[in-house]
Image (cartoon, rainbow, N blue to C red):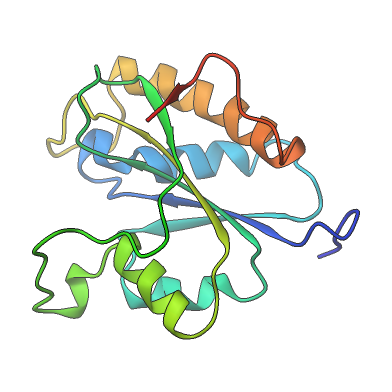
Length: 167
């Protein structure tokens, strides 16, 4: 993979369980992103429900854009761009198995091994997380919009997307 202008590599990581309706939002966005043209230094990965296996994906990554669902005080399908502070963690979380490792836990682990990419989360509130492999109508529209936002973020690395809720 070539790098343009010495800007390093951007990883777009789509997370979620595609068998749980809107919970699969990030994976659906990643699949759509694979169908469009992006800068050569952008890599798209479907992270699914993740875990420790995502740790290796960070190799050589300078920027990470995570696309996922999150419980937010906004309506389903409204996209928010979050830029987490270093050291962010889920308060009171106790990991009892390897299956409970989330992206915030991975960020902490990456920091421990000396990898600290610039991180952005593009998230939305799900409408439904019931068994099913499709997205609800508001999430379908959000997925289309998310593709454009991610493309803009990857093309114009130092700009913020217009008309986007910055949480």
